[in-house]
Length: 245
Image (cartoon, rainbow, N blue to C red; front, side):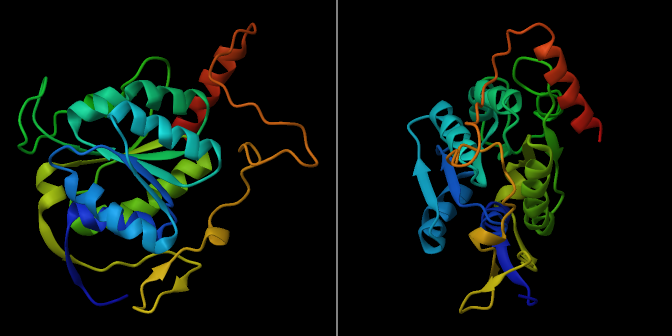
């Protein structure tokens, strides 16, 4: 699709995530990211994806954890206080070396704050947020066009480095309407409308760590508890090396 379309940032990011191969989304409503959640609810069934409105932010991030364990491209979204509730799960994703995309459409704080745009979650995002020695890759778009463009990059980085990637926007960017070009992904399967959509078989498939059955190989074990001498240090150094790269 080369013609410009008018979308708000939240919807542009959601559509771009789907075009980039996201087939699992779990979230919980919170202003100002609700347009993203609502868009996913409409679109995911159209691409044979899974949309779940979870009972809480904590449940949503753990559902994403499970989908990632199974090898799916998975995403969740929330806004500032909701992201705080997800931090345990984000730390577990990092500790288990699992890819996922987390979207934070920031609002004012601390506490419940208000629903006005804010950029106050920067330090929480870039320093890891949860407990332990890890960092998320953080991508911060500055326009609705970049909201769409960054979605594909986020999933590719998550898969390449086996790490959670955070897209950091704010309420203004999420709800602002702007013309953009939705480029989609390659290789692609054109839909009737001409918009390219990644097929499941086009998504990065070499995920030998995923729990997809163990025929012809030893069973995989995914865990974040490492009690053997030196094992946790080795993991943390590996995570740091990926982040530095």
